[in-house]
Image (cartoon, rainbow over all chains, first blue to last red; front, side, top):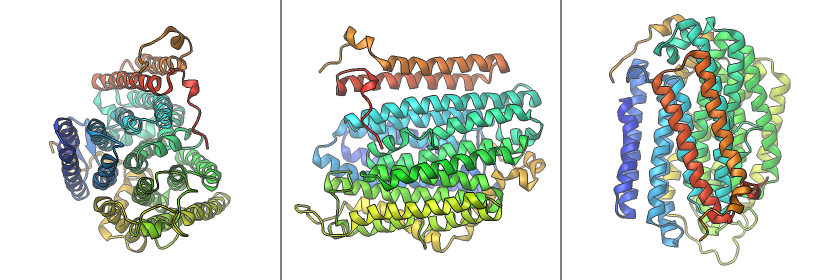
Length: 503
Length: 83
């Protein structure tokens, strides 16, 4: 099953290279993403019914946490594929893109989906290769937009992320070194299951150094301050579908990597060390993103800084730890992905209508675009954490855990910063969405495909604040068990976990 | 379209410093890995080498892009996106 999941995006990319017309490329893209979504969901259901699945002599592996990442990736990937049809149709009509560039875009889009899925199912050391692949495959999605600013953003993205990921490789090598001392040479030292089983015998000093390298390395990719400098550039200069992919999908992969090592480090040296580091970086990200959100003049950069803020909140959730904190952080990852994708889709529609990404010239979206406008307001309210949307719930859970665990000052600061961000962010959205539209802008919304993609995601944005389906709740609780395996005290039973091979 | 290299460009290319820095870091780490652990699994090392190669190739393509849009390969000109 894992093999098919990885094969489908690659096949889609190949079909896109041989397609002859724009319509064929778009059809292949949509069919490919639908197939990825279906196979992804089947795999997710399989994992939650039967437990861990391995494939290819333990090189590929899917447990509850992987399945959760696959769920997010395939859902957002499908929505972006739908949106791409509307967005690229408009670009083609405008002459802003042509067949050749469309093909490159689709090929690298599907390769990027492939690499993000690979992050989910890669076992230990393979994870590093997969995360580096996400960088390489997503870079062309930014550079395809031949503008000076886009080229600059791509260069920064490539250089800064490559350096970061190299540091993460050093952390991975140190972890491997620690594992080899206990397990001996061979494939055993490469799998998460066997690493977790013996992590309490690892050399604590070594694991501390390793975790610092991992956090700084993958933290670069996740956009933690002060390694975030590439993120606002890359996320705002990419075309909107690419921005949604970067903010909604790729960024989660880096967090996934950090949390995997957080679990191992917690087992080796105790929880305090890695939790404190996560809380530190989380608070710093939140604090530094705030002034940039308040003073922003470009609505796509606004969303990019909001991604920095939300990754900070996710890090805080995992840092506060416990069942509740981890639950909140995982829920926040999902909520952030869907909400931020809706916002980037709206930003793409606005750019195509008004021809700018600046905030000042844009006004009266609700009057000009009857569907995008209300969804922009819903997304804006949701992303700033107002009730009754999903992000409100997950932020509430995370902050409540902070107070319960005794981090009074930090939690108060977080609340304060979230309130400031709400005021600043919603001020911008308010100015763009309401008041009278400028002269010469004809009323009329984006294509049905774009609106449809946004509506699918808005359903999740609204629903998860009011009602969490019991299956989804149980799914997240299983992921919580995987992350907090040290607390649960089930290390021994993991070694004997039901493993279905050959699937 | 100016795509050919001219000698004046080569002397002020900080992009070469950027790229060789990444290569040196990567290979230094691999040497470190070999001395620490007597080498990792073959497939993992192959993957790491392939990734470094692909990264450098893509950066090379990007340098052409920079040269075409900015008419220089000096990455010190890339300072317009701020705030």
